[in-house]
Length: 441
Image (tube, rainbow, N blue to C red; front, side, top):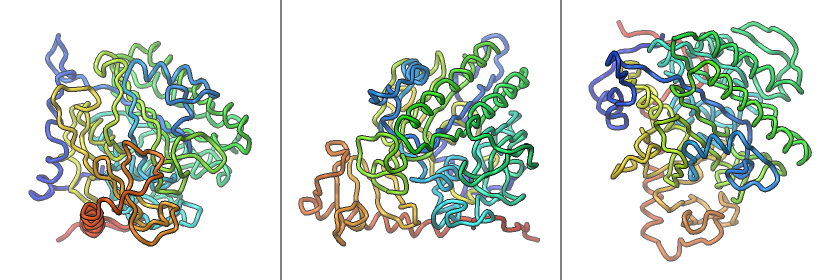
């Protein structure tokens, strides 16, 4: 376990974001008074567009199961992936940190990053912490954050791992706990991952579990094929939910569903401009559903600014876990605990006010602060200008009307703030890939 001592300065920084982690009243058993921690199922779709679920506006793709999950839980409508493409997005999701802080520079493993340039095992992952807290941890799906042995799931906190190393176009074998175990059947990827995940749930017994289920297989050249794949994804989510019910653990399980990033060009639906790789809304804004029966109010909808990097600290809070026991702030956790927002706590102050956005080529493109989103250069927003451009995202989610001329002071302030946050990432960061760590004498 990557357990490290924590400095007083680092402790203060982390506590600011995670206050109250171990005082969740839902965890108390009426019989014994001891904490009963919930299971967590984290499901990630690959390249799913914002409007590719019927509960998010699709008129052509029907997702009955995910619609039901949203109707009985919380649907987030201003939720952003960790980045606009797979590798950095997954790195951020698993660590609660901006991918830039994790040493990511551009692209994904295989385009153009080497397999040795993935998530450094020094980073404390969500699986590391759950494992240290007594959970059984498992991944069944697409890894794509490092190919070499030190960067594989077993080194990142997972007890059991059945996965493909990259995307379906760049992978040949299934792997189980680090060893190749058969050729990929492209038509049965989701089925294979679901089957293993079901066995994992059934084998958990009375021990709490963290299940990471990053599906892949949505990439299809035709719209009809893509819609069929989304429908198949919905059916596999149903199998997971059914297993939770049959195992009598659904009421004590938090289920989170989200997409890794926006859709590929010509694939998927989004009401926004931009697609995968882009810092425009279409590349970053994705569906996110969070469900915990009896705890998260049914039919909840939030348009508050929330990022995938917020999920780790938020889930730890819900499970009564104090992250400061496991993290020395290297890298710094950029996520916030947004549990009060998700559960609709009265008079709760939403902690996230701003968010940075990178293009897939590694360039910082934009910052959102409240309702405003500033692109450092106009051509980053496909407007052909070298000057900053400003959008009111609440009134203009399609990012069509540049308001920079009317709000020059705000433009200057946001520009300065983006530079300040970007520069600050030089501290409390790590390098990508495997870098041997030696404790000081």
